[in-house]
Length: 267
Image (cartoon, rainbow, N blue to C red; front, side, top):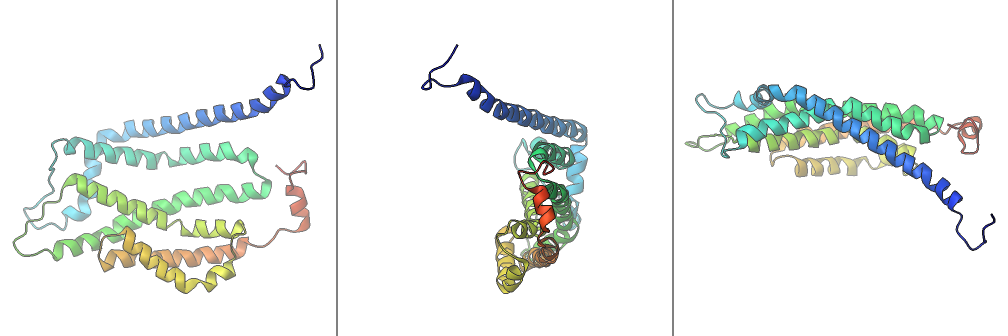
């Protein structure tokens, strides 16, 4: 049976829609696996949520004067604060599975030279985020909490609230974790052609000022925590420029031809 030229071709339409539907189904399945991995980690971590909170609050509790302790000003805080912490830690623990699922979803659409760089950059970004959080806990927290507990006026009893403390440290973890992603962001800017390593190096004075401005916005209003965030950001920027010089070399003509969309070996 022939069709009129003015009638829609349903066969062609279905063929064009199927790849999109398949991609959406694959994305849904991988998102479900990410959520399942997070829930499994949460189920394993939650029984130790109280001990985990004690470990997290140790940098502050060790600096409180003798006889003083943390308190809960909300009747639900003793339950929800450890619960929230356990959920955040579960997401952190599930990052390798989340990373693998993301990689499996995007890898088929990448060229060979993109695959060689994409997975190392993704894995390195996770490691750098962990390093930023560890730097905040082991280096920044003792100095910041020591500063705050030492400048209080006489006669003021310090009784930190457990929910306020958790919100504060999670904000610091996020700030330092994101700050430690600067080398990855720098390399991606260079690889995308948005800028060059030489151009970034020429803007170094502005970057230094920007690091201190970001440190001022993301950390408490004290010079210690601001400097402890700004200086690593500057160092990480320099590392990003250094590695950017290594990866901004253009591939030779043969590599470009092999990775071109029309090449059978491109993917």
